[in-house]
Figure 1: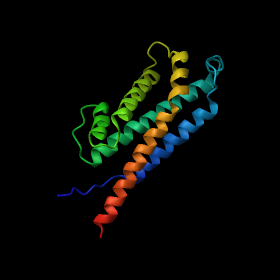
Figure 2: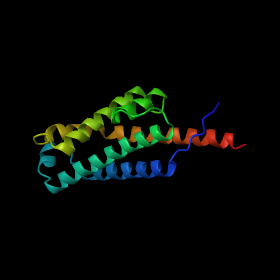
Figure 3: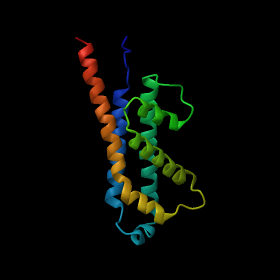
Length: 154
């Protein structure tokens, strides 16, 4: 028996656009050197806020899909990610990257002590592609779900 999936596709797509917009803004304003980054002041704060917003949207998307597909009763934000990995929406590698993003978001939000700008710059310059990889994973899933839905409508 096939379970009808009532995904909030438009909401998910809207959040994907928000992620892409935020990542694009960060890339446009992120200097290649740590020295320049450390001197950005308010712009640096904006970069951190945009990253926080992008990662929040990633967590929201995982939550929405997990809830809409009734995958499991969530125990934590990590369980949303695990649910998506368990059915192949996210690879285990992407799930691990998503967990690391969430850890970075926690550092930004809670500002444990002070954010280590050197480490943050390294993360930002080396891991921006992870956001695009997440977007592609979700887009593939949405397209596959649409194709399955179209076939069921016949």
